[in-house]
Image 1: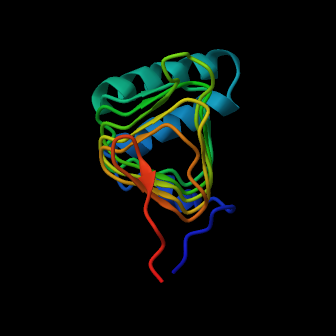
Image 2 (image 1 turned 90 degrees about the horizontal axis):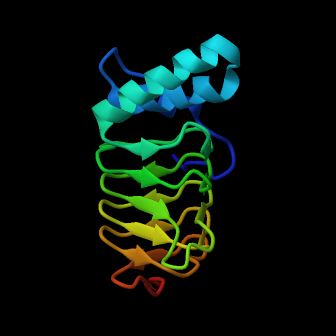
Length: 160
């Protein structure tokens, strides 16, 4: 079954039980974005609790497409201005943020998989269905469907 890069699969974010920290964190973000007044403050409080439990730093107003999966959210750091497309997977210890000059943040397309320990820094665009390998440091655009690995990341040639 192919995962869509455009249509979010909201079931991927549905908590599987009470103790499902990454999905509870995402749910608190969704609630924060939809609520106003007292309910928004309560959602912000839940967001803080789940942020501490998961060890993830994701601002509650970050633009996240539906269907995000954080299998192991520990150490995930996402700049508040990052844009994440639908149905992405982000593993542990991933950083999505600014580069040394602080000029711009990444934009992820749909169904982007980011391996453990990867860093995507600066005004980088990652295309739909791209894969960022474990511990890669991405400082330049990654085309749709490409695989980026290494430090600094390079695009692997397509197998033909």
